[in-house]
Image 1: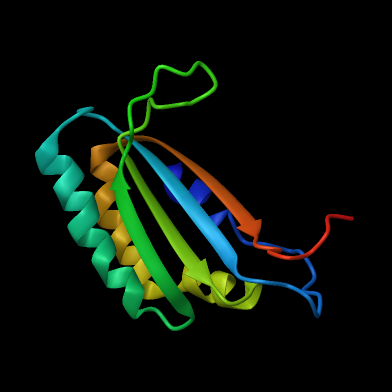
Image 2: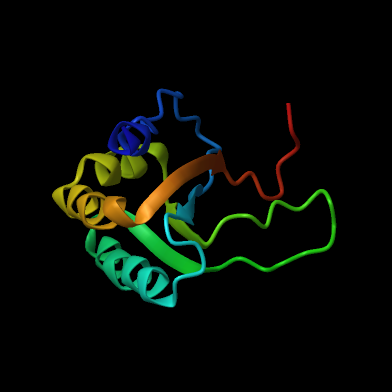
Length: 126
């Protein structure tokens, strides 16, 4: 089921001439929350996604615990992948390396939440 969620991020938005970079944020809740071994396995496994054509940057890390009520600090691991455009993100989502990563980490994961957004730096919102 989570594989469907990950592959269901396929964007159908039309690219515009002023489109900026795409950021694909993936938050993971581990089955064994707080496990350094599982955290490390997700981080190490995710290193290979930088080899997918169109991936500009991959950043990964752990949650910062916060006392602010507005902050959701319940996840364990975060990965952000940056692309030049939605076509590159869609290529990434269908790539065999991405599928292999998903297959390897899914046994460790309880929940995944994904956010995709277009970076419109220096552009006014419509």
